[in-house]
Length: 241
Image 1 (cartoon, rainbow, N blue to C red):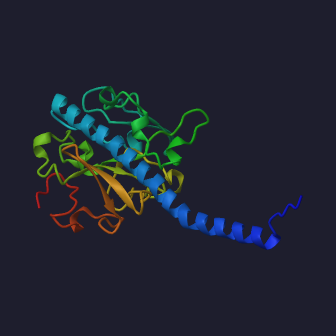
Image 2: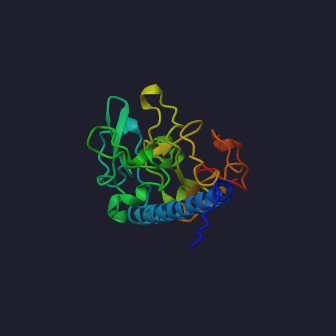
Image 3: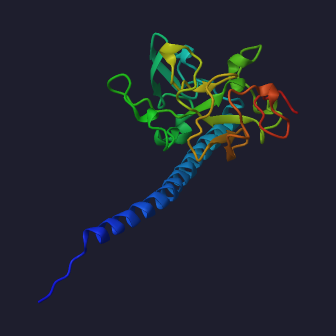
């Protein structure tokens, strides 16, 4: 019986065609996978945003922002920090989610982590996962007010346009080399900018509870709250535009 196999040339041609198809299809599959992560991240931020709205409705004011320099404060009391930074010196090595003031409204530590953020899943102190991808607007923190009192819902002039949370890029902090890369609970002018991991864009949550993805061309880091037009993103709760 005559048996004829593939020649070396034919095999090489088939391999070349498969390689070309893989090169064409990989970006498509990669983009689809990242799109799914972006949607999951939006869902996380939606749940967190709704929890903020519920908290504000119950306590008539926003919780604290949870910055690293308040690492020893308790978030379980009214107006305590929404998450708590646990640190050694100025280096934040884990975020205490369960004792944050928002956790009774969320009941899940998983929604505090963006699916595209591998840094948040790292164990930085030898035993605890870092655990946080999102940061709260510094301008909504009590320390941003003259009286150092929590910001009331009625004080936020444009809740549908005022940014509450960002999906933070872990390498953007301005806290110095010992704190580089830490998401410490809130973000402010000129540092702690978004991570553009979602198809060259980032997710935002707003004070009314809604969430939205923006391309990075819409939001240029590092941000200056006063540089944005009133019809775009707003950061200062007292600025009506």
